Image 1 (cartoon, rainbow, N blue to C red):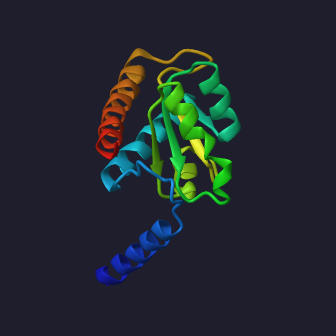
Image 2: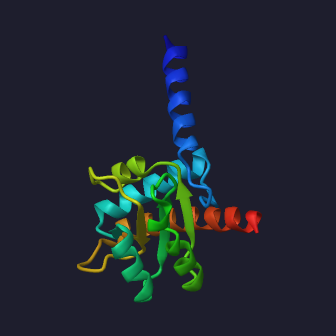
Length: 154
């Protein structure tokens, strides 16, 4: 029985990878993907998350710093082609994940999400010191891995 569910999972993974856009680089591996989704989930709990292309672009242009997570299976791809360029100009690290559905689930929304921006502190209100430290440590860990991944590509 265990092998059946494993083959189903691998079939789903292959479908996700087949739907990837050709510009989806740097693409997070399984471990980094898991850590990134955990970070997005924690940021959503503490209201440190901006969802959607319009909101992400607006916050990057305003000078907010964070980690941009972009879904790799967006169609049409023209919707997100300008986001990595904006991120590079603003010195904001970015990473692609295979599925917009998984990104939406991690971001606590039912609607598939093209991209999210994880901020280190909430835009409104305050957060407890302990929660802020946990979020900051997760953010730092994922950010360093993303920068290493990007450096290995170029």
